[in-house]
Image (cartoon, rainbow over all chains, first blue to last red; front, side, top):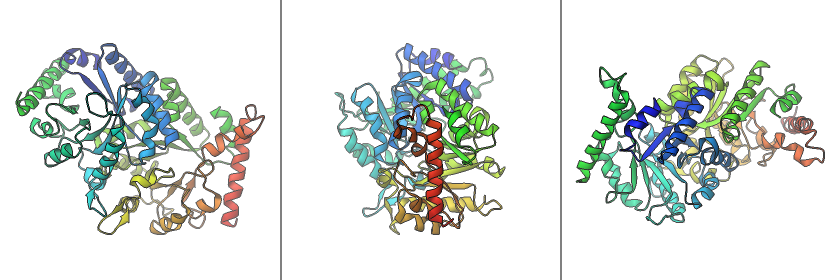
Length: 245
Length: 245
């Protein structure tokens, strides 16, 4: 399934994000599929994002770094959860310094529950928690800015909340964004293009919108990879038209 | 290694916590070791905690629930990260309702960086963020209270911060705690016993303090399991003496 989807879309898609939970759910066999999918993507020189959302104390984080930046599950980027604090990012920095790896830290996610914690207002300035975290990431990331001016410490910012997109983009001018929520979760080309910065500065991700597109068609089961391709093309057109391309 | 440690300690230890990162770091082979260790612990009727600290939007969380409450990686309890919001807990509730599974949600961790986010003061009441989260967990957990009066929705509260132990225990009288930080991270029997509630209400965990105890002895490499047992006995004595047993 994965190989067919990749083969039908790779001329259009520079970056593939894999959600590890969907493999982990099937135990060892599932994770073998994860490993093989990454290997295939790397063999055809695609950029890979492991959507793992790990986060743990530094001795443990070191093991997660080893797991996902080396060895069988090696990818180019991973997502991280910041709740345990910024010391939990340290083990990943040596990989980032090498210039070959990057992370996206969860800031403002695209699910309904995002408001429960990320939107709490922090005293004394009464700012959203995600800004407090974003400001610290911005500071840390300033040391890891590549030649293209974006830092290898990026952030996950949900594409489903237009109203904040401009504000977040303005506040973090040099931060690279991973933007989920396009498609299935309801974000449109207009929403997500607000995060882009003169046509740059972010990766817009659509997962279910693409890989389950076949479910909308009668012959979807046979032609799932074709419909994935179609969904990619439509997504690109939608976003490009908002960017005025 | 794991089997020897378990065989030398299982008469003293009711609950084993596995940190999945240390297995994940070794790819498929590592995770096979994780699977086998869990299988062995379950075969000798021990309670297992998978320290996985996962947290993701609900469609993904459902996959993590399937991964760790069913199938090859099935354990009795898991740890969860709440940063994405309380909707991310929903997929785990059906397992909790069955009365056979439980979760520990990260509240106040034992690492230095815990202060970065968990200690932020939230307006308007200027309370620590971990209390805001704890209050919500307490509400959700009230629906899942077992006959022993503790809820199957527990919390991870670091054992290294004495000053807060009493306050947290008082605020959440019916919440079951997983208390890391004993041993290597510096918590003592006195610190952690404050979390216990009339001799109940929590699981005190020591990981590195026990499994790396052998490093303090010249013949440690040969007798690692004996020294693990010794560390368990010393830990029990330390905590019991503070509890006045």
